[in-house]
Length: 345
Ligand SMILES: *Cc1c(COP(=O)(O)O)cnc(C)c1O
Image 1 (cartoon, rainbow, N blue to C red):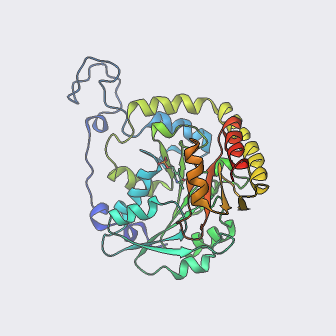
Image 2 (image 1 turned 60 degrees about the horizontal axis):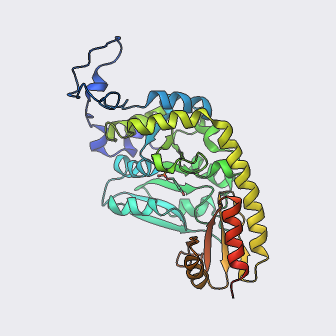
Image 3 (image 1 turned 30 degrees about the horizontal axis):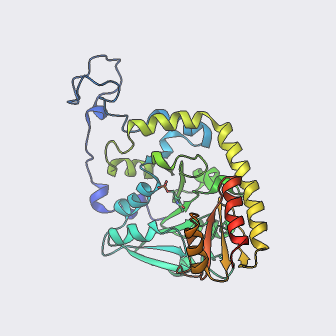
C-alpha cells in the first residue's frame, strides 16, 4: 500500500481541524458548563452531543469485536462514502474504480466531488475478478468500491477476489457490507487488523431496522478513522440518534429474530416468484431483497403501483434489463405482493 500520506489529499493531511468546546474540555468532572454558548434551559437537548459518540462506539465495539478507535460513525453510510472522496481524492485528478451495477451513491458522490468514476462490469454471474478491477486502476486510483452483498444484484462478491484486491491494490478498498447480517458469508470485518487499506461499511438502516435515525459505520485502522474524524462536521451524529442507537443496540435479540424471519420469508417469496408465469428468473441473494427478471418489468411495476404495492424497477440498470428488485417485507406484505402477481394478466 502507498503510505497514508500519499493517499490523502495534501490539504487534508495538513488540515488543522475545527476544535469545538466539547473537544477542548475533557477529563475533570465538571458541573457548570459555560463554555459552548449553549442555553442552560431545555435540558437535556440544550447541550451539544458527544462529537465522537464514544458511548455508542463502546457498545458497537463489543458487538462487532472492533476497537472503538477503529470505528467512525456518520449520518448514514452515505456520510462515510462522501468522506472517502473528500479525504482521499483530489478533484479533477484522482479516480476510483467500482463494480457495475452497484449502489448508486458511490458514483453520485464521485460526481459531486468531481472525481473520475471507473465502472467495471460484472459478469453474467454478477461476479468480478480481482484482475479486472486492478486492470482498471492506475497511479491516480485512490479507492476501489466493492459492495458485498451487492445492491441491486443481491449476491456476495467472491471473497477470494476481494482478498486479492486487498493484497494487490496499493490504495484503499472499501467493502460495503450493508446487508451482511442477511448473508451466510462471514463479515470481512474480522480481518480488519490484517489490512491497513481496508474500510468496511455497515449501517443501522437494514438489519437493525433503524433507517430513520441515519447512523452508518465505517471500520478501518485507526489512522484512517482519524482522518475521517478530522474532516467530518463536528456534531455529525445528533443526540437523538445517539440515544436511539444505544437503546436499539441493547436489544440484539430482536434483531436476530427479525433477521431469521426475513431470511425465512425470503426463501418463501423467491420460491413463489420462481413459479409465477410472469417471472423469468430469480437471482440468488444474500440480502433482504432479491432481483427477479420478469416478462415485462415496466408493465408489472405499473400494475403493482396501481395496487398500492411498490417494488423497485431496475430495468434501466446495466445488466438488469426487465428486473424488479423486491425487498422482503412482513409475511402479510409478501403475501399481498404474491396475490397481486398471481392474478396479473
Ligand atoms: C442501504 C445501503 C446502505 C445504507 O446507507 P445508509 O446511508 O446507512 O442508510 C449502504 N450501502 C448500500 C449498498 C446500501 O444498499
